[in-house]
Image (tube, rainbow, N blue to C red):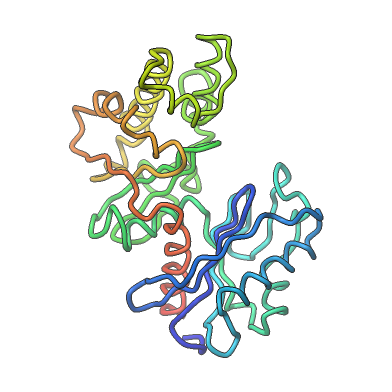
Length: 295
């Protein structure tokens, strides 16, 4: 076990901002969550400046904090801590985040660990949220794209029957394209634009659903698409529960009935995430603690 107490500093790195908080091992409680936008200066050094400032704001100190856990989008080498992203945060591509942050925080490299952000989201919900105590769980984060995670007996799995390569479902071929073509913000915006000729953001479409039949139709179609993905692609994994999170899940009342209709023959339950934006912070920390116990 790495010394430094039973708290880790957990980061969730998103496309526009970063969140961070200390997470306690015993009850998985989070300290105050601090947030910061990605740096205006497009450089790795500026990115690490933001991380170290956030560590100070969250109250993390090398002597009292066991390390750092990151929920990171891909493509990313989670074992080595190296980013291979080019479409976002390209200034981090090829950079070893583990070495850079460990040096700044006066930690050993082994104290800085990484997990896919969607997997971290699911692990948070499995450990302390909507899927606590459930043996087989799949999770989708519904937003700009579709993130995915698979868990068996409280552990993330990235291979096995019914699990797509790396646990990532977004680019799995489906109905002449890929899953993300049908289940994402762009699919909702595209379908609404094709019906009305009007370009709107998803939140605006959802807000208008009380009076706009086109919005109702578009979300129902989204729900049916999601249901087919679950029914066809998760058949072999056979989850007991599917947890839905991300920005689109905030409008779950508009699409869950249609999704449920597509999976009526399955013995599974759809649940909306409980922890929300706290889920990846908790999940990354859970993975950190589990790895530390196995060292």
